[in-house]
Image 1 (spheres, rainbow, N blue to C red):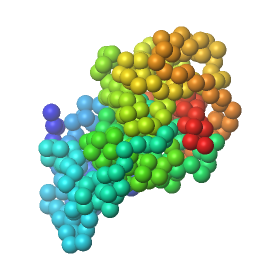
Image 2: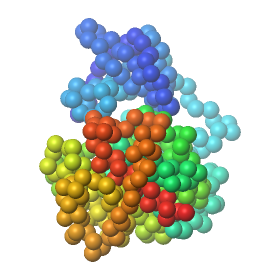
Image 3: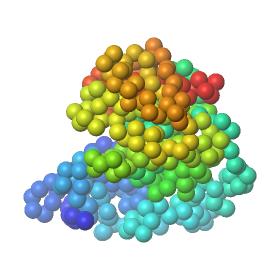
Amino acid sequence: MVRWRSGTVTAVRRRWAGAVELDVDLPDGGALRALAYPALVGDPVPGDRVLLNAGALLMGLGTGGYALVVALPDRLPPDPPRAGDTRDAGHLVKARYTPLQAIMLGVDEEASEHHELLARAESLDGLPVVTADLHSALPAILAGVRGDSPDARVAYLLTDGGALPAWFSRTLDGLRGELVGTVSVGQAFGGDLEATTLHSGLLAARHVLRADVAIVAQGPGNLGTGTTWGFSGVAVGEAVNAVATLGGRPVGSLRISDADPRPRHCGVSHHSLTAYGRVALAPADLVVPDGLDPALAAEVDAALAPLAGRHTLVRVPTDGLDAALRALPVTLSTMGRGLDADHAYFLAAAAAGRHAARLAA
């Protein structure tokens, strides 16, 4: 449950879109690093008293090392403006029935300027959509798209398996100039557009953002229990089904590694094998990068052989992808490993992006 703390802001550290990092002193003499979302709680300054949810930080769980600001109790932010402010016309509630539920304007709500367009939209018209398990794949997929199609319009669908606020992701902040927009779907929020479901979010990416390629992945901080079904990335298979249902082209980015110390994630991760092999009922293009270490390549081929009856295994050349990955404006990291430490992982994601770009051409 919640581990509450109260403290005083002593310093404002970094800022990025939608988030501010703070130093907070506690009454017992301790100190915590905290993160606030100004759109939810207001903009903290030194001297403000803050209420914190410190549970995940104190337990050592994956919150990026932060306590989270719940409120500035002595200096509450004003209500949002009402007159003429379309944001206040929204009725789409995210993080529903939690103390910090946020009420947004849904892209397809009647008050939205896009309502009529999306009321008519029924198809993705063949839009290539790359599905990925981890948020860390997002920049690598984008590098693969950009390597072949530098002018492609790429949209990101933020699903709710990890961080719910789009603002948590410094990676996403660093990629804003590379994307035509982010659509936050389900319980996730804070994107350029808000959607109730992945289905409506995909239609918004195609018809509102006019994307040439879309990428679907959860936010940072995925959940996994070490069991076959107990991981948030199982939603990748459902994403394949959604894309196919709407007439898109599902492209599966595989989680491949020879650096992960956990046997269940070596070669092709069990996350990919479960999501694509057992959850995805519609066929997808599963991208296998050329140029892997021969031993890893043999392990990957053996793991994917049972999936070939449903999906199409597509081998994609990787020449030029390493340079594209190194040219990204953000630092690559997955489970604490950078590009050189887990090259196969990022190469596989970039190859999926390259394949999607070629489908879109």
